[in-house]
Image (cartoon, rainbow, N blue to C red; front, side, top):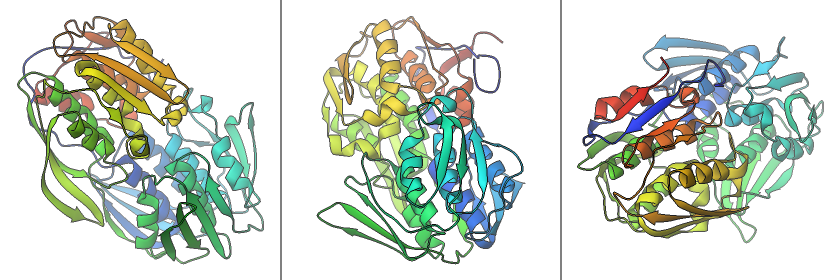
Length: 450
């Protein structure tokens, strides 16, 4: 069952080419952070292009529960009247973060060094995900956490009464963990230091600097060392949210697979810590080009043109690229099924603890559709069979995971027989316009139980 409604069975089929412009919603990562940092600033932050998916809306409601005023002015225009660092009020009710692992982990960090007690919950998928990798470093500040077995939600966080700054080495690349620690460090005295051995998406660092925090980044022998001076007064900002590269992955990959397609995807954020998929597709021989490259709001942006690419080859994806494309491996594995030869994906352990075990979910669906997949704890390999040779004809389980559902719907646009997903409802959490956008491009996607 979907988190918010009855299951929505969806089917995609091979049809004509995809043509036109795909206007992607705002970047989810930046949208979450805009609301949270706006709530921690003093004054009014104005946000344009906010992603209005369920995950982000849940974060907005959480910021209201902590005392910020969050206003929707329509057409993606929002404002947040913040309460300042350390100014959060203790919520009077449980904070429900729905399906969003990013939302809950960042919010935990933002309140961890405030003297208050807060209970968090989510939908069935989120409540099954472990939170220990965030609550463990937050405990170093003096925070306590009590949850279900395995560190799962519902969970109550007791914020530190007298927080202390920490120096934390992130054991596994994770922008969520890094960001939670930095947000907690805002209300701790002195310097909080985060060291990551592999760079992950750096939206939090960029935005903290934009809001006036004293933050420095340097490359050391230990890794990327981020130093934040605590207890600043953050200044409100005007934020233009670039379009989400993780959402852009789906129409881009669909255009590469559907015969005769030519799709332009404007205004996509190309932050180097997020754009790994597009470079990987180019390495495979995809006809994917960047046009009108520019900078907006401190983030690199370009228009992406994706055209049918029937001669792609399997490759070994550089493991060091994993952090910059961790959410895109499901749809990459779909593209790999149509390439010739093996595509090897290593260093992707984090996929096991996303909204679902994404390696297992994709492996089972791809195998059912006639594709060979091998897997291990931190890797998986897809042996492509080339264009015109992927059978399809099965119903894949989405597991309450929006990216699994969208990946298999993209796959069905090029398989010999249609592909279905047992529940497309979770797609609204991150990409509420996905279905209409794809249909406008010419995709054959239908709901089967409405």
